[in-house]
Image (cartoon, rainbow, N blue to C red; front, side):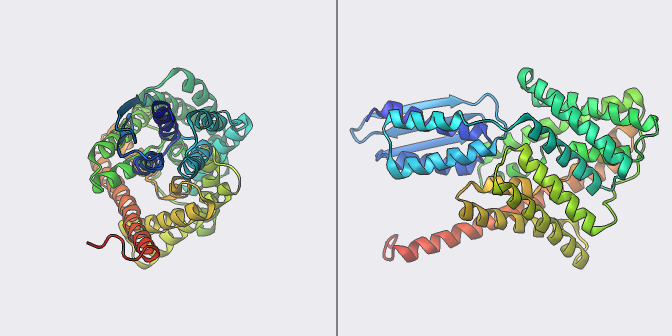
Length: 412
């Protein structure tokens, strides 16, 4: 085999997975497995969000090193699913360089999601969470219009703007201008709640959660990069909304109130998360599984909070459930757990706290800004701990099962 081309093919798959939304530690494991399958004597893999490096020693004793710089990454979970299947195929069949390239191009050239479905996903995600956060009928109409604006302008910016801060700033600014303008015309009675729902289309708090989890797992470089990317995205949202408020006035402030009906909360967050599943380009029955996961994640939060009125405890319980649910669904569907984890966890994401933290800064209410900042960090930590607990438990369970299948191994 041409091991130089084989290594190039493995890096192609790794780069595409990272650009499609793969988690760093899972990608690291996938690359190790592919390298091992080809019989390399030694293989060292280094993955961070902006860089992949692999050094291998071939069966003939030759050392090869290849490096990829990752300029930008997004989320395309359909592609990630098929790339994951391709990685499994590589580990089982170790194809030659030509076959590996053909299989890779088949995945990369898959038909893209229809544009109309992207618009529908934006409406379901933004409007669904607006209703979840207590919006009424006229508010929902405004949320639909702003969600359409987000999708349309976002598709244009995708082609010309790589800076996440600028990207989020422009979208948040335009959204807040429309919401404040509609409120001035008497359309929409809760502009802050509408914007909270829309913010969920831009929020990067899950990157903060993943970053905290990676830091807790001692993957400090990847963790800090993810946290800083999240902070950059959040800063863009805050600056955009703040700029609109400074130019047009602060808008109205009602305070963060969930919809008074728990059944409406459950239905609206389920619809919203199905929209986010489509937003992340998930396809088939996996979309339905994401909706089911979101429904039960929020149900567990509500029940836990009723028994123990603590946001940290309720969020931790929801985080444990959604991580365990994603683990099971990944085995059932033979797909990356990230697919089910991301969309199903959105009801726990502290979008309202980000908005009111920024509102406190703009209005000069330092007490509000400080309190919301603390709740935001507390919520992210609770989600990360929930994910980490399931990671640790599942790792030990898999380790025990492996030892049961291969008794006598790993004994000194």
